[in-house]
Amino acid sequence: MTTTVYIPQDSSALSLGAERVARAIQREALARGEIINIVRNGSRGLYWLEPMVEVMVAGERHAYGPVTPADVAGLFDAGFLKGKHHSLGHGRTEEIPYLAKQTRLTFARVGIVDPGSVADYLAHGGYIGLRNALSLSSAEIVNVVTDSGLRGRGGAAFPTGIKWKTVLDQAVEQKYVACNADEGDSGTFSDRMIMEGDPLTLIEGMTIAGIAVGATQGYIYARSEYPHACRALARAITAAKEANFLGQNIQGSGKHFDIELRIGAGAYVCGEETSMLESLEGKRGEVRAKPPLPAIEGLFGKPTAVNNVISLATVPVILARGAEFYRDFGVGRSRGTLPLQLAGNLKHGGLVELAFGCTLRELLYDYGGGSATGRPLRTVQVGGPLGAYIPASEFDVIVDYEALSATGALLGHGGIVAFDDTVDMGKMARYAMEFCAIESCGKCTPCRLGSTRGQQVLDDLKAGIRPDENLKLLHELMDTMQYGSLCGLGGMTPFPVRSALKHFPADFGPSRD
Image (cartoon, rainbow, N blue to C red):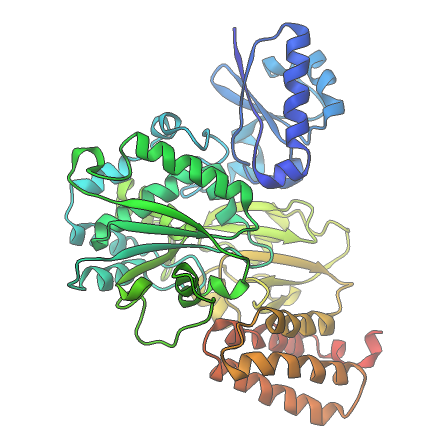
């Protein structure tokens, strides 16, 4: 009898030795005469347990991890191919508390399917959304997405349905769908996990978007730092075309939509939609002035629906199960679920998909397990390197767009980076300015010069030089950056600096050193 063994080929799992573990298991099975079928799946997102090996026993998966090559012989001795007890065992995978408490909609198949297999994707509910979309008019698809309450998961939280309707309403022959897969925020990895672990759901979502807005061509703009994701996407695009879920006359519907993968050169600013479009056109990645909006005049001057990976990967479940189903999750104007990424100083870093409405404290302690060092958590940064810092006194804030905005923070892409009480917030504020200076495209003066000047002012504050004068200068500088920059890079750089100044003012003088 053949036993199926699942070993992630997720890049984080590979960095922790998953490839060596896979080879060791294959060798050990051969030596013992055991017949196994190794499936290289995506990660379930429990990164403190990676490499996590799963074994299918009587239709249920049993998890073991973190596994090293040295553990393999012992696993075989213990009978792990039959789901037997071992010190690295965690029982049935779905019953691991970290997973069992989640609501996985967008990530329903990540860690479960073979990422490049259309047959496996179909067997786990894939392409139901596209089949339903093919039976609807473009306007009806847009209405479903609008009624679901889906908002952009890339940071701006703009209603996806409104953006699509704007593109649909443009009376031109050529339109585009552009997927912004330039995931560059620190502490974020949900886009990568989708592209590596379930790329077909992104492809399906883009295809539905194309049909909805009247586009026949889509582009995925991926970052060069994601080679594994790019290979997985290329493989999945080919598989989708071979199965006639992509390309000409999709499933005999008369609808056409194709996707091309483009790889960027690693500029953080190309995560901004208009810079990405410039790069897609073969130009230097610089921000465009708006208006016109990309939905009216985008790629190659044509109407373009620009969405990020998670937004598009969520569309299939909405079309498969209905707007009401998705809208029933969440709170207030934040509907559905969001993949939240726990990183930094936490025991259990990883991905958690939950309906909007949980608190930061729940995420950090019920899922993250508290700090990895055992010291008190002092603050978390939410929303990437330009996100605000939230102090421990505000950890009971609800995780949704409006609640976080009310505290002066932004949810952004859902990245949460934790710091214990040894962090120097003066240095973290300076890093925000340094990051902006390095990544600025240079097109606008507030961002280009303001970030460099900001570092100098913060250095003077740290040295105790004219503190009152320099503090006033810093606030004026941040006002200029926030309200005068062309895009969010310069405009949001003040967020981490202001929040650090507000909650940790003592860190901005010479005393911390």
